[in-house]
Image (tube, rainbow, N blue to C red; front, top):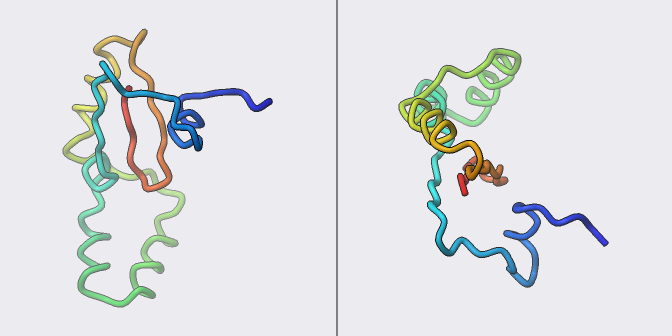
Length: 95
């Protein structure tokens, strides 16, 4: 039997994990990190220029975005009850 985690519970077929009584905050990767230049290039150019920029910066840590301080505060708010779940679409849920 597979080990149960909040992530597997959220995405299991029976959806047995409930968010009742929990504060849920979804934050996009563009808000968590400063990807404005990448987004501008993506919207104004073709895919190859965007992919080239991403590959050039693959080893460099992303700069923090406008929501980063909020996430830090939420994580410090009560470390005993806050869990961070990574979702495949670059969102994080804080349960």
